[in-house]
Amino acid sequence: MQATAAAIVSALLLGSVVHGQTTVKEKSSYLNVGMGFPYSYGWAYRSSFLLQVSGHYAFKQVGPGVFSIGGLTGLAFWSHARTDHAQATAIGIPLVARLRYHYDWGVDNLDTYAGISLGLGVHTAGQAVYPLGGFHFGAQYYFANKVGIFADMGWDVSAVALGVAFKLN
Image (cartoon, rainbow, N blue to C red; front, side):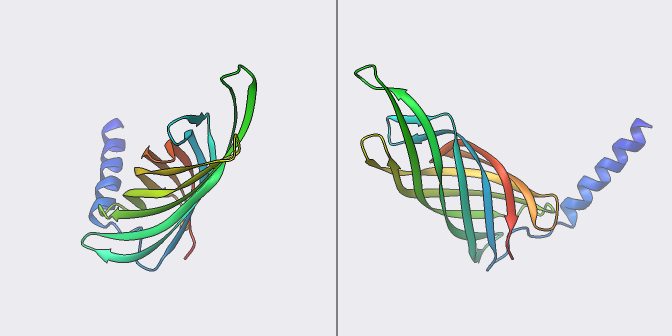
């Protein structure tokens, strides 16, 4: 029984590799809604999480993948002790542009990517504005025609972000 189950799973996995379809296509739009952990601004501020929304437009097929351009914004709430030991509450809002390369491994419904980010973070404690930037990589897996999940990691806005992914067209 275990050998039969293993054979079925192997056939499904190999079949999806051999007959993979490109998940990200040129001239397509995508939206992600999720939560990032931890969220950081500049070098000094860090929250426990960031509620985030990002969007991407795939604009150029190059080799086995597609370049996309997009942006990310969100809201982070936290409180921290100031140098005078008083408690300060703050809200952070990132405004970040992102450029990604989505590599097609030939696996059905799987999108893997790596990218760079550049933008600003607005922090209400002291009305500060900080530069934001860095790199990220991740994957999206679509379990339905236009709905899936994503995981994003790196050194840009969040160390790790998880959420729901949507194909818009």
